[in-house]
Image (cartoon, rainbow, N blue to C red; front, side, top):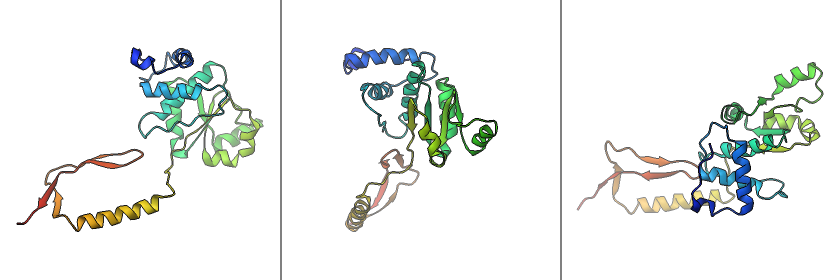
Length: 219
């Protein structure tokens, strides 16, 4: 269910955003998902500009981008705009199918070579034309590019789950290596404290939150 918003949260929205919040509330009233404010905010962002040709949802790993996209998909489905395609890395196709069917009760199917060829044999000229949300991999969408382009999609969701590399990453790694070499040459020897467990964080930027050390300080 959509959480009840407090006045501080509501005040961050324009009147236009509040209208869409009510629309989204109706679209996901039966969804089996506990929404967080930032997820609702992201869905509103995707809808706020009717003239926009798309939106980029780029939250950090683990913050629920699939849920945010699910809100948008649910709204499109409620509007009966049901020519929907989800293009995702092949290893995430089943995850998308599970999330959309179990949490949003949206009809979906995975389209791959085997199912595609089976439908062609049954006389379907374009298996991408379906009554369900179509989920396929990047590779498959590329191999069937003419089919994909032939359909006037109401919504296409592209899940870019691959690693991203900044053009300056090589220089940054070199600078970090030099810094660590110089720093380690100037501090006493150390080791991880016996029995201690380092605490790390992951996401767009990996890091160490806690690393208990024992220093070998000699007088």
